[in-house]
Image (tube, rainbow, N blue to C red; front, side, top):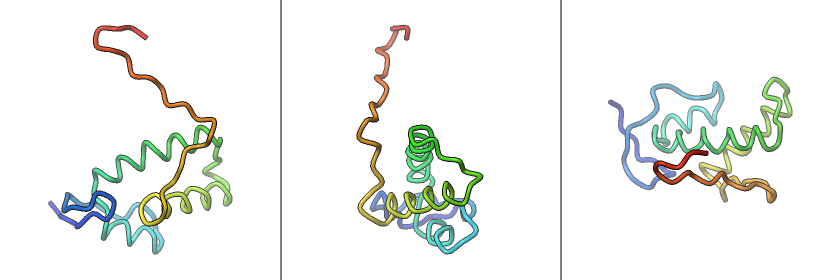
Length: 96
């Protein structure tokens, strides 16, 4: 198990198995981001993709997501759209 000092969590944690992108950002993430922080990004990026209807096959979509990843991990943070309403979790035993 490879440990990193995770810049997102501010503590040592298990590191990623490989760089998530084939670029400088991917290398930085591999060196400084934990699996736990990456899981948070996956949930956040899924919301961004769905809310903004990002086409990941387009250059613009890819650039948008990489820019948001940079902000999420190393900048001011990546925010949800103003109109976004997070789903409410069901109470135990309650059906949705």
